[in-house]
Image (cartoon, rainbow, N blue to C red; front, side):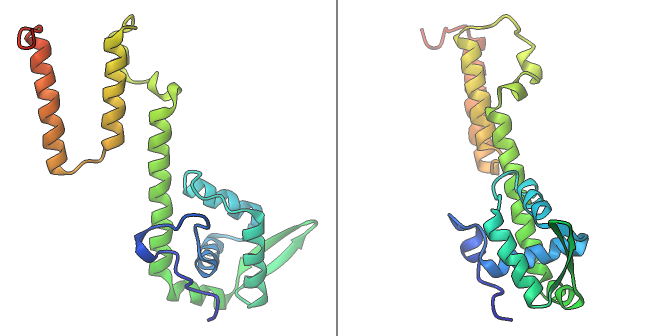
Length: 189
């Protein structure tokens, strides 16, 4: 069917600018309509939520896609006052079934990006650091040591997850640092 499979995933990731080719977005919308009928605004919020804020389609992207799905008979629309409720049709369901692996991969990437975005927010959100247990171990420490500990934690969080080799490298650095701290400065004096 013309309009589908525009190629969002070429190269293994999202393109800059528009995150979806129009055909891919239409398939994702259909997959979300399989779950339940939705309004356009709900689809925008759902994509924003699943991507952790990485992808927030504008109404100028969602509503033309929904109009196309309606015009091609892949979705039906029911007016509820000024709102429209979109439902998938049988032909829309068949199209989703035919493209399920691509849809799963796309939604999986969105959710993975959402998890990474949550991880980054946690690192840079001062509120989330207040709950760290090791911050409570030295509650009065406002020194350079406290700042260095926070820098170390941020570096570890930014590098995580790490490969086996990277884990060995990081462990070596931390072991050397612990050894120098325990030596009381004797090795570096």
